Amino acid sequence: AFAAFADNHGMGPVVGKDHMDLMQQMLDTGVAVVGKYEYKLKSRDQDYMGYDLGEVNSQDVELCAEKCNETPGCMGISIAPKIGHCWLKSKMDYATPNERDAYIKTEISAELAGAFAAKNALEKKKDAKAAAERAAFKELPQPPRGMLCDHILNIFTTFIEGTTDSRKIAAQANVLKSFERLRPYGVQGWLFTESDAWAQKAAGHHVIVVRQFAKNPYGTPMLSFMYKYVRLASCRISLELCVCVCVRVRWCVREHASDIVVCVYIPL
Image (spheres, rainbow, N blue to C red):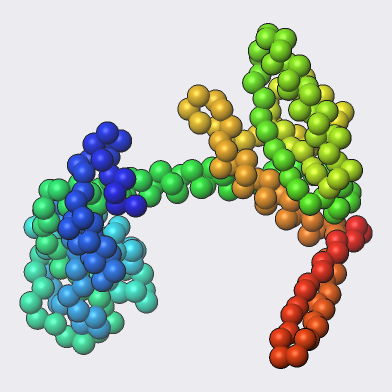
């Protein structure tokens, strides 16, 4: 994933293999990198008394490190995991036994800091996308009872909306007809559209319509969203509406044994 941090994506400088290896080693050893500083574990179960510059009501290393970066003279943090609190330190010299984790602050190279900043930005972007998809998944389509219990394949698509090209309109109408003709063979069609007209036509062909979905900046439904949506909706509906009965059959030929599992979905 580190190889994705390149100038042409606006994510900072290109990171060489040596830097990628170092970044991975730092992450594997639990080092937190915030801004241009790394916070490396100095000790566990040790409390460095005094030299407090402030405190934060959190045990999150990165959050405490951010506050340390913002505080002049801060050289490290001391975290109490059990009470969810941390202290910003200007110095950590003399330790006494206590339930504290101490992290020492060290400046890293600008290139390595840029690479970590790019990595964090990419992860935040992915998290935001995943959160948007999870929010959309809350409103799953509800097909007629028992409708999906005998299907073996899902096919989904999206249409060009607002087109006046008669050939495109005819082609899209034929897709809906094809979906309906495939239904007796265990195929269920799905249409992702915001068009009232196409949604009405799709419903007339027993195609499941999804009206809300994640889109790219150009307004096109995202393929990854459609795939995950159909998969999760199918699993949810199948579990709600069907009983799955599986039978395992084993036969032996000399020293060899073989198994086959047959599963049947029975509509409730």
